[in-house]
Image (cartoon, rainbow, N blue to C red; front, top):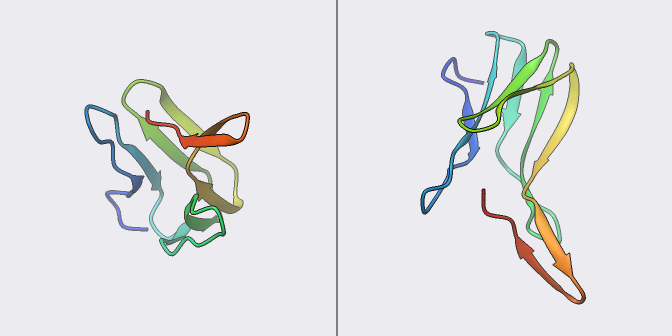
Amino acid sequence: MPPEGVEPLRGTAGGHSHTLVAAPGTCRWTGMGTDTNGLTLGAFEATAPVYLLHAEHGATSCAPGKYAVRRQREVEGRRARLVAD
């Protein structure tokens, strides 16, 4: 992961970006997400805590481990839509 972090999803239409940051050499980001629903944006593997930064919500920490980063969706009946933050 670069020192400035990674933005798995850039905010659009006034939304806020989410940025993953980690200490140098402690996290590997793979930005090749694929799944049948089109929700996976990428994955990361960390040997130390990683932080997801958001302008409105502050930071959320992730313990060392392997993670998939996915978009959120809301399901209502038979319809689903992506969540815009």
